[in-house]
Length: 246
Image (cartoon, rainbow, N blue to C red):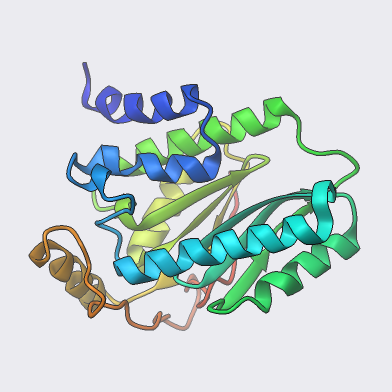
C-alpha cells in the first residue's frame, strides 16, 4: 500500500459512513497519530484546547439560532476557527442570508463573519453535497501528505466546489496550502480565510504543542494574527482572499 493510500483510507471510511464536510474534520487526527484520535479535539492544532472548545460552542450556538429563526428556509454550515466564522450553505432569500450573518456577528466570542451563503431557489442536490464531501476528503488528504503544509491546523470546508481554508498559518504556509488545493480535481475556487502569524509565532506554538505532548494548554494561546502589508498579503481576521483556478 502506498503512503498516500494510508492517509486517504481513513477519510474515505468517514465518507462511506456518511460524514458531512464538518464531520470530516474530526477524521484528520487519524492522519496524524493514534493518540490524537482519542481526544475529541484536534490536539495538534495551533489553537489552544480552550479555544477549540470555544469555537465548537460558537458553531453550535449559531446553528441552533439559525434553525430556530429560519427552519427549513436555510441550510447552513457553520465553521469557526479562532473566533472567525464562515457561513456556507444555501437559503431561499437575500433577507434570510443577511439576517443569518447578523445573528452570527452578534454571537459572543465572534471576531468576524464571512457570509458565503448562496441564495438559490432550491437546495443543493445530494449529488452536489456528496461531491463537496469528496473534494474535502481529497484536499485534507493532499494537504496532510504535502511537505511543509501544517495540515493539522488548517480547516477545510467545501461548498458547491469552492474550497475555504481557515487556520493559523504563516504567509508561505497559507500560500502553499492554497496553491496545492487549487490543483485538485473538482475544485472550482479556493478562498483563503487564514489568520497570518509570523514564522517565529508558528514555531512557538508548535514547540509548546510538542512540549505538552500534543496538547496546547490554556496558557499557550495563539497570538493576534499578524499580516504583512503589500501584494499577496492575506487579510486579517477572516477576510477572504480568492485564489483563482487556472
